[in-house]
Length: 613
Ligand code: ARG
Image (cartoon, rainbow, N blue to C red; front, side, top):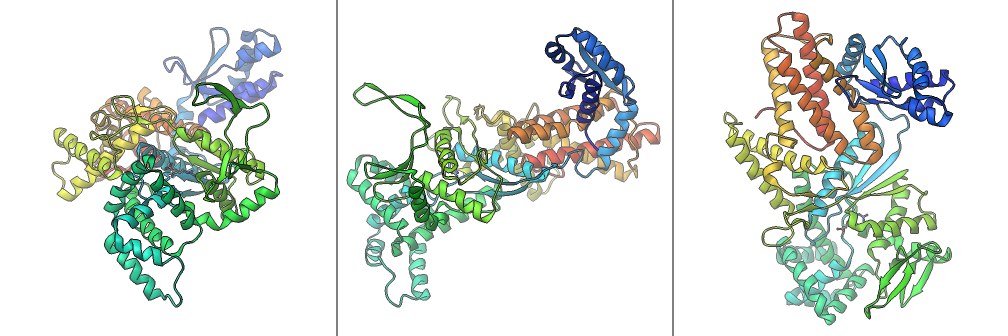
């Protein structure tokens, strides 16, 4: 079973081959002019160029062969040699029935599945999440679901930021603020002799009493600002970071407390957003791999001393960029910058944990591909890490890919901030979206008959759909402006519009069940039935494009077109009030199939539709 675009491409490829030309010219696409054709093939033009022949002549040859294809009602040449095809109603009916019977709604499983690890969201302990994390979560979740749905063996990992300088900052800040903890940690450099599990539990309980999530939220930004013009404090924090990493006992205990409370809160918020991870590994999890890795890099001759720090040079000979020095002069320096592996204090850096994580993933899951769904602003970082791992033989070239994205901006065109100028919290953002959704539902007179609980559930789903669809409908590289009014509208290209359409189909199906109308074989006749079937057939094409480009916007676009086309179909082709039982049954099957496919597409976007609204 295959979609029409693909099976017609195969037929056209065979026709080109029979005409003595490369089958590659047989690529068939949906027609640019649906008023004239369903599909088109422009291969005769390219073939003519390479064979130095007349394009029309080639088109005539190909068309003569294609004309014998029973699925095609017409094959015509347009202009200088475009081939236009119309599919017969019978072939469309056959295809519609295939999709209706297919639990995957016409989507093909991959011929050669791979193991793929999706590294996404990347939240941090204490550091507040910004729009970059929001987009990483939404896009990463969708890419993960798409890859899994098509058949890859997929693991999604949050790659929790729990090992960097922010840990040293927090430890130093807390020791200063809380004299009790300060003194305790001064004492607990090593585990005291005979320190039991009960003693440890006592210390942990003390931390739980004294250090809350609110404290971390308050202390981190203050400490981060302070280290900028307090070199003494900065030094202290850097030292604490290195000591933590080297295993200083008390620091590890306090750190474990930070990690636990942050993670619990984060997981809850991600879950509310419909983002759930298979693995919640931290940067810290690879600590034990770092020393042997550093030794190995050394043996491979990749590690270079640089003013007390140790780096891997990743630029190839001649790869340079111009750099302006503080005195205003310009020099040529290697580009990309070298990867910093060990800081002058002996700390592991962001790139170090990323490199060691590649080793760790190879041991545990051995992925063919790791996709890093992270802010485009980190492109240079990933370029350095990838090159270093290829140099060290930690991954096959091409086995690591950064799927970057633009920012969600405020109306000032800069990355979105709250009115107070801070970064928005995921929790607050979701609540904002939910509140707007409640308002929208009320003003549209929707959900009035729902229980309060069901109404809240619907408002939540509408709010999340609004945020996610607004993000995913753009190609990920594109930045967009945060506009909750527009995102939550029930009209236009929005998440709520899609939910509304799917709820509408559900209500038609409920009515059909009440009236004991059952679906039957699809018989495509009316133009609106043809259009809907052609769109259902295009699902596979949209998924494969989204997959190849790691770009969920192709799924979003398909879902939107499907909802619109269904709407037109329903306006032109009454279902339950059609006179003939066979037509009722056929149209009902089309409605069921549309819902199945729409829900699948929404699910791949990470969007859940309510039953009613
Ligand atoms: N925690 C990082 C940040 O907030 C993102 C992590 C992305 N993933 C990675 N493997 N580096 O910027």
